[in-house]
Image: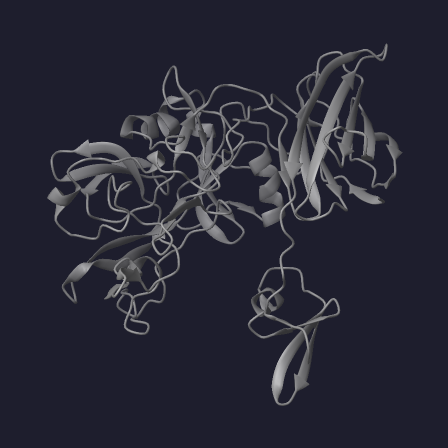
Length: 456
């Protein structure tokens, strides 16, 4: 199989951050006390009541939000129901019992509602005990119970104020058009070609650090965490209804596991001047889970539908690195191998075309380097096996790391994809047939809802 290979970045100077092994964990290691470190989940926690399903947001910048707003800052009714997080009470009684009429996702929860995520009472005593959301099996977070947990107020505070060089490891930022707070891991190495201005939170809305989706992939692979601006679900005092109104669009409020008295709990605001605050337990806030970091250093792979982004750390005395990719577990069906020199430049390929690696001059010993490499031309929804061998000048293997990865499913283009702003324009043609508009993409016809049309 002919494979197209391209380089994104290579030869980044600094000390590599570790990756934790569990699915859904990001690669950065963060100190939350003098002795403990954690890895963050890949995104904010979300829950689908119609299926009783937990997941992490697909991307770090994704959040459900609050739907449509009127000029008074409150939700607008849609079909008699509030939209998004305001639809936490969207169920009705039927012959089969209570049935959810809202099939979407929620990501604003009352304090400690891991056992009752749709709780919306405004009586604080109904939230008297804390049940961690991490006790649940999270589909894209290992899918086992008790893999994750919520940080305490002291851990949140240590993260932003207590760890070594804390002030240089956070700032406001914008990722793929979404505002939020950027957190850097303890041993941070910025990807070559990108910049970061630390501890500049004077503007609570928009920070000076602006990254495209592609740029953020590199930041994330280097360990960075993004906490997006979220909303807040609370009592609708105008209509005197349950906790279904969603306000406070321009801030980020994340629960801590620590109670405050008998009616309140602590939460953290990372935007503006980061700090711990207190609120009623019934108020719906965002949840970002962590897990204890075991300090392991694994070979990170971030797969796409037709590509995979690899990251590895330089090995002392290694002069060459060879990446092998296979189509079977026995590693007899080799798809491609690529050999790099100590500076990350491609020196040999087999069954592949390539774009030469970019070389970045070293400011420190080469043993403190990170390498990023993107392999393109893979098949979607497919298992692959890889191995990287690190050899010295005598062709002796200093280190061998191997594993497997699975590419994601190819996304079927929809009408939304065709007109989505700030994205590369797709090669789409409009067709008018029997007074109906259809879209043609790569020889296939779709209706305006994105459904494939077999016969037109």
